[in-house]
Length: 305
Image (tube, rainbow, N blue to C red):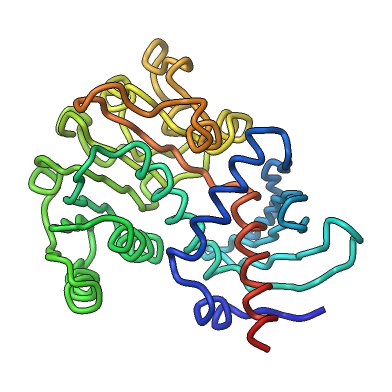
């Protein structure tokens, strides 16, 4: 049994590396060939403990992510087992894995849900997930422009995107950022909607990844109501945690518009029927993502000695 650090994960995995393993894991889940555990949260005093897991027979792994939340700070660990023998294989730091898998899920959904030629990204937030999404989207799309909206200083992230990723990136206000944007990512800790959904251009793809709680949201009713399709990782967990959807007024959310990502990836569902359709991804993070990427990281580290 070995330990894989965040530094190991960053050394052996780039954003593009996790896309194939995540794509297959979601397809397997959609076909009943993989399973997940919903997130369980337990708290007392200032400390909160959360767990979520998955069994992935094709990949050969089972495992769970366990993490604490204290004063708004997260600390993640993954326990990885063989799904064939049950043998414990590794413990893994999971901060880097969490960054990679969240952004990769957004890319997988955008590859199916964004319009052809999407090249303008409006990004809300400047934290670790915001940076991960710029890096992942810069690899997956020919971005011409990145517009960053933040209550803090967006200049360092914009400079990183320009100097390291070759993107034309700048800080913007909300109206300027949304004006004609093809791709929109919300990666914040907001508890109330970030913008008026009527400002989103027809045909946009929106990934909302900041909230995984039923009492917080980043998107408003106007945008939820305008969406032609809403993509989720797993209906069961979404129905417990996705405040963006659960806090919508009665009659705003049409659950017939909601599809699971796995059915989109295996072709059983479609994301859009016209160029003007707005497609949303509401991501809360599921155990399948953590365990599939942890398995890949474990293999790469073992292969590299």
